[in-house]
Length: 217
Ligand code: PCA
Image (cartoon, rainbow, N blue to C red):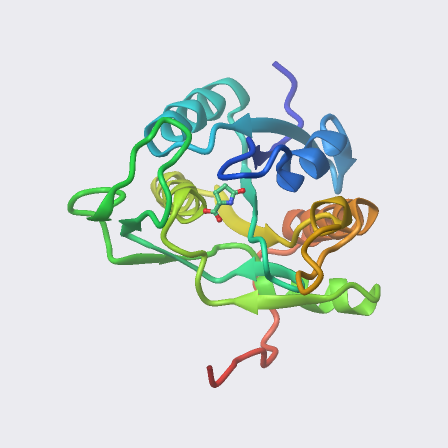
């Protein structure tokens, strides 16, 4: 096996009423890219609590990544959201793709209440802003499958020295909002550019910058 460190970059299958998931549409274009001496391995996760966990575990064994970055759709958000935190709860507003709808169940029984991202989220924010990309720090990844995977990635990373993890939510693609006049969207090329840059910063910087990006809401 080559010694090149790997970034495991995951996207999700469509869920709810959507026929595509922009997270996978963007992530799959980055498969095999070389970024800051790392190789990107793109992996598709099912939008289902149990199956996504199994698939993540299989991908971890296969890829042995040093950095884990999950990407998911947050339809309705107007900018790319770099998540700060994942919480130990599942509260599904809609059934997942296997029909499971956990309410107020832990992701991991006995696990910590939350994990913080171990990627340099403020440095990533600043780098993307400098490129003219609309981006924010988010303090909630929700309580659905994305938060579940973000929590599990951070849990895995917390067990392994040198491994780091984080999660990024993205808006709808323009073609998904053609009939949703109020809904914001982001072009796929911009998402790909933003993920590339975010990975470059994550791969080359461990200690985060001290930059204010707090909110009062
Ligand atoms: N978004 C959902 C799950 C899969 C996805 O792309 C979420 O935010 O939980």
